Length: 335
View 1: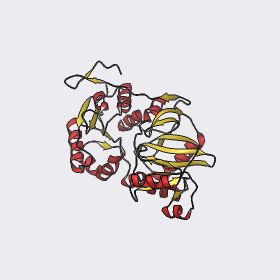
View 2: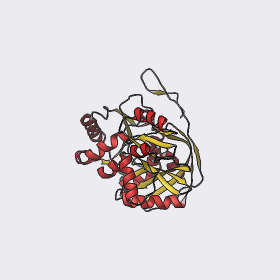
View 3: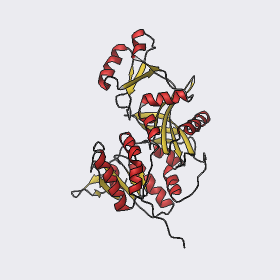
View 4: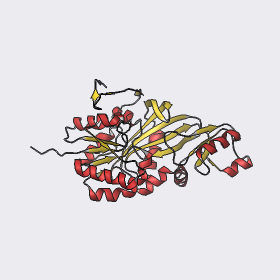
């Protein structure tokens, strides 16, 4: 009988990513793989920690060297096979230190190249990349355009390195725009034409060699604080075709989350997040299982592009809680 390979997964900045931890857990059990799901966070009260097989307290990401050392020490202690980042603020650091982490552990960091991360993490870099490669985006508006009146109101303003729609605003006039500029900070924003249409999140999975495996568009029915609350899977052929073209040029790896809008003038891209988005479990549960794909790749399997996920599924996300007893152990939870 062939010996099972043990695959241990470390989820960084686990926070509220309970669904993602449970998706990895479900894929592991379904494939009958030995190994654990480990979760790391700077807060001992991050909910996702309590759904993992082991929880690890991490330093703040801003303490770069200590954070990387904690990751390396954890990987060696628990024989981690795969490191999964989940938040934007750690992506550049991990892309810069990927070679160091992988050379000092047996783990693979699920991170795109430093070049790709820098394109995605700065909204002006994203805009330039998309325009240079023939992808449609909202027109970028300069301060000079505003002063010359070369603008149609409303406009949209957001931080260059923003996440989760924090400090992202629709401005109906120059007075509002000036207020939002002050909130974000001088020179730290991008202003674009305001778009109307059907907004989509697209979950894409790309193997370690840059080959697309799945592309799943889903309509953003309702959003709270930048994260999807209600969504519906829709195999929009035009979006799938265009995203495949984008992935071929960008060459990311792993699970990628793209935001776009289908307007009367075609598809317009809003941003690219080279990581698992908060709503990724919707696509995973529909059958485009990035967690299972990762396990299969680590087992040495070759995957091919497919659209074998269910269509027209609607997902409704909600809040839940767990109770910790006096010893900070989960008690009485049926979640």
